[in-house]
Image 1 (cartoon, rainbow, N blue to C red):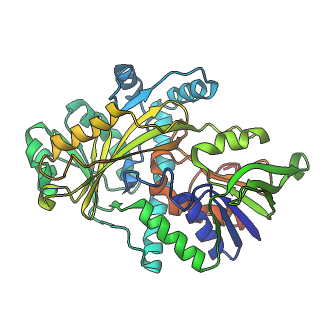
Image 2: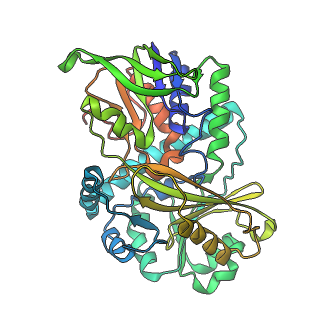
Image 3: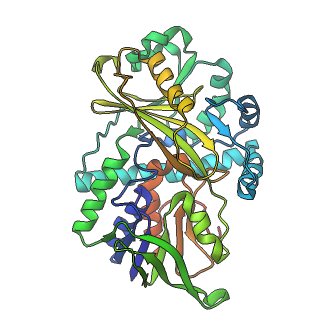
Length: 424
């Protein structure tokens, strides 16, 4: 079949890779001048099966109330006169029950674990270099209540096959000596040795190059404006996608199947077709600092639980990512939130980096209230979804790309996941 993929982040590029491997003729439409230019560009860079606990959990409502109005809060909810944001917020609160949280952990962990093994296979096959480290991921806690409340999720993940092992403060510092300066503040941690880190943008660019070499047609500087349809009910299908191409001309591209991997922008793009996705953009921040003292910077990828920040070593750079701002589709930098990243990084690793030369960035994480992405079918027989991965786009990218290739090809994916539009 001829398949058009809309979007060339990690999810779209991985979808194109596996669709081509399945024997399809694949074209990728991307509005940016190259792959991985938006949410994949400078994220936290963790392959974190151990971080599958969703934002919506029993402790979230209390924390949200505490953070209201604080510009440097880990999660900043700016109330807007926007029905989608209010709908999303109400659904989020519903997902905070213990039962729903446990189910969402199972779903996210299943796809994340499947994706990590898929990434490892792609890495072995292609030899793509992306500053990969296979030293595990460690959560550390500076608040006793946060540490204790995390144990239920950690135990569930361990029971499902993710070894998120609880450790004391001494073991935290033994595993990552760069944290020795705050040893007296750490109350505990948990460590998952099977998790990884690496530069998501470098991997995605490398995979796009490999895919192009094999015949995938990437059309950059090309914006999809709408999908064209025919038929109704069970016979409804997509006939083409209208685009503005790199020459500024309108053009209609036809295919047998279409895969939407547009992140947060899938929601407004699909709404005219009566497909109402519960995805809201959560603006995430990152800062990248040059490492000046390698021994003082962490090598194990870290999650600072109290501040909702992640730290990943990328060769001679340190990436700090996290926080979220629910405030529409704008991507302007908030100085207060940028300064909060630098302040915390300097507190933890004062001699590690040149903090006077930060490279700040924001991207729109496509968040569902449950953190479970949309992967699967729609009411149109030849239109498929692979979007809404939230903070786990890099973690789930390869696996969801492989899964959607199976679904488009009429095969059952090799992972126990609640795929969209496919029943139980």
